[in-house]
Amino acid sequence: MNTAAYKFTAIVLLILNLALAGAIWILEPGSLLVALAGGLVLPALFAATVLARRVAPRVCACSGGGALYEHLAVGALMITTALLVALTDIADLTTGDTGERMTGAMLGMLVVFFGNRIPRESRCQSDDPQTAGRQQRVQRGVGYIMVVAGLLMSASWIVLPEHLAPVAFIGIGVSALIATGVLCITNKRTQGVVA
Amino acid sequence: MNTVFKALADPTRRRVLQLLRQRPMTAGELAEHFDLSKPTMSAHFGVLKEADLIEATKSGRSVTYRIRMSVLQDAMLGFASAVKLDLDQPVSADAPAPEATQP
Image (tube, each protein chain N blue to C red):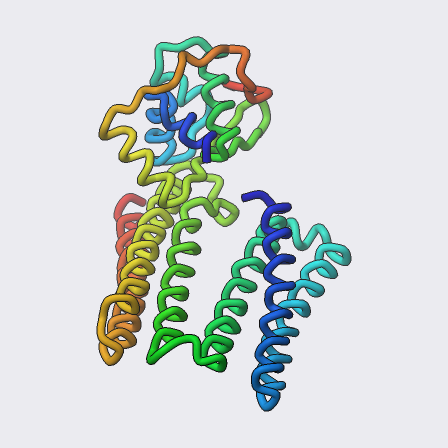
């Protein structure tokens, strides 16, 4: 997707967000604070993004340019999902732990989304081809680890019993971080041997 | 996504991507691995750039290519290479090409 598509997605989610926040407030007037927080966080982020691009376009370009709207759209999706889960709970549309499972599976898919993009990132790579090659390999390895971990994290919330799902979710996440650390250290040592 | 499939459907372009997976290379370094004319190689680079699978950095008279593949695209490259996918028509030198090539 290009910047315009992410901008459009963010705006659509912004409108959906406000509608969900309004619905939560109507169904449960006592949850005004939750509705306000959920409904106002995204518009505030959107305004800040637009302002940042107007005020400091060069800084925005250095820190990712069009990626700002992409990250905004992903953040918007998270808030919208949280509001949707809250609304289904309030309206008694879900039973048991469905909301919790939906949120867990969604978080796993976010790890997949960001992990998938890690190897594409080249802004911090060295100008030296050999060093850049090593950096690419590490980024690719970390990307694969995160994608597999994200899929497993989502699957754990979908298939495992309620008492095991969070343990597996955290265990997989921690294992992925350890594997990432090992990969980076191994690469650093190899680099030292080569040098 | 269609441009990515198109880019991965040709064995020469897949070989270029596999070479760039090792390290960034100049157009000249990449061309040494192929028995193809400069315009044909440039056309292949153009297709890969259009699909946003590589990026080109110009320094002086040389252009350095760097891979920009996501995990999913990398897995697709592996799959296409494994099944030796070859769906594309021979690339033409008229296709969009980068502005400069070998030093």
